Length: 300
Ligand SMILES: O=C(O)CCC(=O)C(=O)O
Image (cartoon, rainbow, N blue to C red; front, top):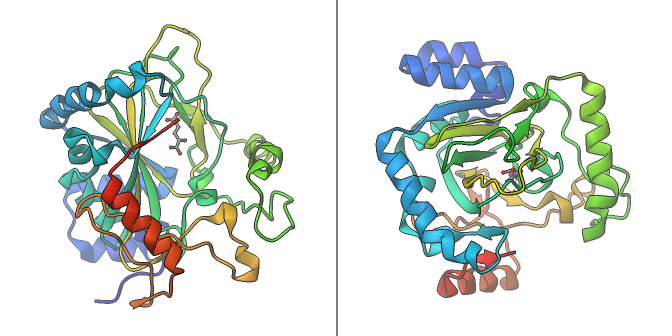
């Protein structure tokens, strides 16, 4: 069977797909939640809850040493890796998107991120479009004053905002352009859209999946002593081109391609277009191989 060019939950063919897909009731609710709101919440169960504690224990040393965020702890932490590849989540995502998902990046936080509002489509995107999502897992119960994840239900249906849309007209954007242009324009758009603002006050072991274009960020931390231990798992889907929009000029067809790791296999996912591997710059391949050999999380 050929793969869909639009994630099922975002396509006009959703009802027909659901009528023939034979999903169980929970999976159908998940797909319909994603379609309506651009996010869905799933309880990963008792076994995952125990792994949350292990993931915290396996990453505490980074934070004790001053880290604010740990990228790709899965390379060293078995519990982070197991949560990132949680089989029930893979099944749900495959049902919603019509392609097999694979996690390619993890982010651990000890405290709220206070990250500015954005959609992941400016950081990670794909051809065909929108085959990317985030899975946000609470590693402890989230308190409202601890800077929860914030999000705007329905914002996934707004047009994707590129760096050019944000006023950067110089081909590939520069790193400063994000804070200077993207963040304020994006915030303005969300303000003007009149959508509700929600906070993810999840319990340990619950996960919130966001669609690639859902507006989200981190709420202000009201209690400076609070923790908000969490794990973000960014996923791509099989047989796509993967690229970094912020350093691409999509209008000119100039894509800054990525060769993301597949956390499940520990190998790499070569970007593909219509089943054919895309040509990649040798430096990109060399960097990817080196990262796999070093297995070193990136800490900031
Ligand atoms: O965890 C948060 O507060 C925000 C995380 C986020 O925005 C992201 O990973 O894209």
